[in-house]
Every structure is written in structure tokens, then in C-alpha cells.
Length: 372
Image (cartoon, rainbow, N blue to C red; front, side, top):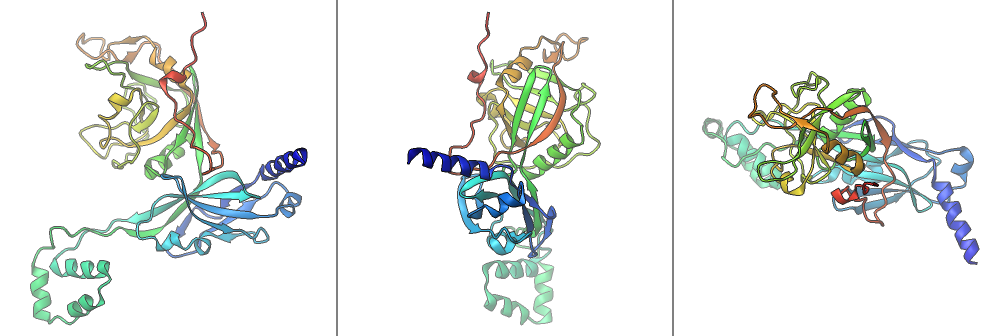
């Protein structure tokens, strides 16, 4: 009996391999359908499935928000009708959708990212009161405002808006795409990066685009801060094809608040500390938790390393010289023999299994001991 049970489990695992969940299109307008398709390895494998389900997951808490069966006879499934919360949630946030085949998670999860328009705030007191009544769901207050005389309306329009009035973000649609990881093949070894769209979705999408466009090919780690004035290991920095620290991909974007804390192995966007609109392609990797806290709230952390402690530590050990050879007082953070990103590419993310602990981010002690 034990052998039969084992064979059954192995057969289930095999059946779950090779499936994927794909969006029919990567954008869905507000309150519209969100079509996705289940792609099977073969028609025979499709017909052998006993149960197929979708799981909607909060990636921050790693909790299942909803689970629903899927009819594999339907070549396209509407996520919006399967999970109405995608359009009805009071505070939409990034969620993942995972496919289950016979109770086994299979294929990369889909990222379901809400997109917002952020209109200007109310222009006057009348608009403030209307917005306040609408947000509170108070029809009596709205009716009273509609019943105001022209003189009363003009008087309220002449007054400034309430100081605590804020523009309500308008949900304009959803972006849906398969979650990926990024592999950086460096001259010191491979580094595998887990992206965190739940923490900084805009930064993640920009990074994916740059990786897939080949931007990071043959790009040096041009800065290594091995110790600051307090003796803390700080960062290694890359992403500038010129190797000078001044290069950019030709477009920049605003600072994006991130919920991911800066700690060892976390990737964050480098920018001009005096200008919030200078996020681009350069990024740094944090080298200690103690130094990372200085970056929280000021820089956009968007990913974390899950494989490659050896490669990262080899990059850290590169010989360093003065950042400005003509200035003996300049920081000693310029690699004399800089490591490079030979190439970068995206990889399918593994299935999301909420029943197991999430994969751990690398720690300094993960580096292999030196064999002498």
C-alpha cells in the first residue's frame, strides 16, 4: 500500500509539470474582464487532470485570499468573474494568482498589479465636501450639496479646500504578467534575484524591461563601499554602461516608496540623493543590515538575492582605489579590477506554495568556505 501511495504521489507530481498560466493580454481596463489561459503540456495530460484550481494569494502575508475551480475545457478563463475582489477591494494591492493541478502548484504565478491614476486634489471647499460625502457613502450629504443655491455654491467655491483633503487614487485597470526571476551571470559567478512587485511594482517592471532588452550586458560593478566611517559594509553598485557612475538608460522616473527593508542581499535603485526623479537603471546591493537602515524610506528596494552569496562576496573583495585618483581625500571605492555583469536574463519563477516557508534571502554566512 505504501508503494502504491508513493507511486500515486509521484504520478501527481509528474502530471503537474509543464503547465503554465498566461494572460491573454497584459492590461485589463477598469471593471472589464481579465482573460487568462491555462497552457498544458499536451492534450492527453489535460484530459487526465482530476482537478484544476486557481489560488489568489497575498504575497506579503503569504495567505490565500480565495480559491476557485477551473474548467479546463474553457480555453480562456476570466479572473475578474472568478475573483470579483480584483475590482471590488477597497484598497487594491498587488496579488498573485497560482495554478494548481490536482492539488499541486504548477507554473509561475501571475502578478496582478492594480494601476492607478492619481488626480489632482479638490480645487475648492465645494469639491472637498462632495469628495468627503462620496467617500463616506452618505447620500443625504450629497443631496444637501446638490440642493445648494447658486450663491452658496459660489461662496464654497471661493474658499480653499479642506487642509486634510486628499486626491483619491482612481483604479484604471490591472496589469497581469507571469512572475519571473533574474539571473545575473557575473565575472565572479551567477547571482539569482527574486523580484518583489508587491513592494515596488514600477521598479520591478522597469528592471525586467532593461534585463530583457539586454541593457545590463557587459556592465561593470563600478563602486564598492566595503566600509564606511563606522566600519559598516555598505554596498556594491552597478548598472552604468560607462562605468563612471553617471550613465543612465535615457529615461528616469520618480522615487517609488517601497515596503521592502534594505538588508543584506537586497537590490535597490541608485539615484541622485538630492533629486527624487532620478531613478534609472543603476542599482546597488546592500552589504549589511546595519547600513541598510540608512536607505529605508529614501531609496526604492525592489528585489533580493536568493542564490549567489559566493559571487557577491567575491565582488566585494575586489581591490579598490581612490574614486578620484587625482584627489587623495576621495573615497576608496573604485574597483581597480571591476567585476562585470556578463549577461542578465529572466527566468520563470517557481510555483508559489503557501504551505511551505518562503525561500530565504542569502546571508553572508552562505558563502562557501575557502579551500586551501
